[in-house]
Each structure stands twice: as C-alpha cells, then as structure tokens.
Length: 152
Picture 1 (cartoon, rainbow, N blue to C red):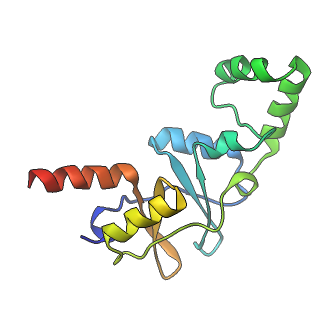
Picture 2 (picture 1 turned 30 degrees about the vertical axis):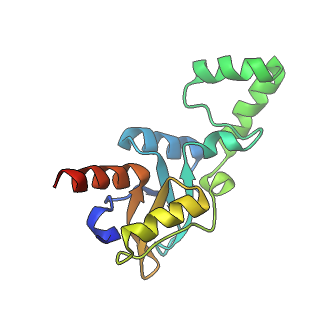
C-alpha cells in the first residue's frame, strides 16, 4: 500500500504571513489538527499543529478567551495575561511553524510513513510531489487503514 492510497486531501494551507488567529479558525472550521504553511509558489515551508499554539512561552494563541484566561491565571500575573493576548494578536504562521517538515512522496510505502512518524515523533506527514503538497497522512489515517486491512 502506498501513501497516495490513504492520504487525505484537499489539504488546508496558509501563507507564512497568515495571522495565527486565522490559522486556528481554519483548523477548527475544518476539524483538523494541523495546517500546512506554503509560500507564494505553493512550496511547503512549514507545518503548524494544535500543540504548536502552546509550545512557545509567551506566544500562546487563545482558542477560547474564557478557557485561556482560566489557564493563564494559574501561571501568570493579571498584567502578564493581557501581554500574552496582545502578543498573540501580532503573531503570524511563520512565528510558530515547524520547519523543515518531514515529508514523503505519493509512492512511499505505509511502512516508510510509519517509520518516519516514529523516528521524528510526528503525528502527520505531508505527501509532496515536485515540491507541492498533494495530501497529508495522519496517525489516525494509518490506524484506520490497519483496522480495515484486518477486516478484509
């Protein structure tokens, strides 16, 4: 079985200059755990996952102002919470994206995809042909394929 046979498409892509609030909105709107960052030529330059929104100290983006306020209040003084919100309003995709991105070709075996996920401790791998993203494979996609293979 090849990557192209189980990859999800279309993918959700943003530019490096996209405000993080818009990135979060797109991810929530499409019920996905990541957004790919592509340049003006459509070349993959980075990836943002749900976890990336909280990985960078002082760069958290509030998905829910109420929940964020409750969480932040435990770690920060009240005047610091407002600074976090102000900083978040100015952040762009390029500020928290991970780069370079581990990728595979459409012809890669699923064994190779899984090996790369484990080796690099990632949950998703974009599928790239000629520098352009043609799909993405998540651990969920692999699990679904494994379960289907058992029942066939």
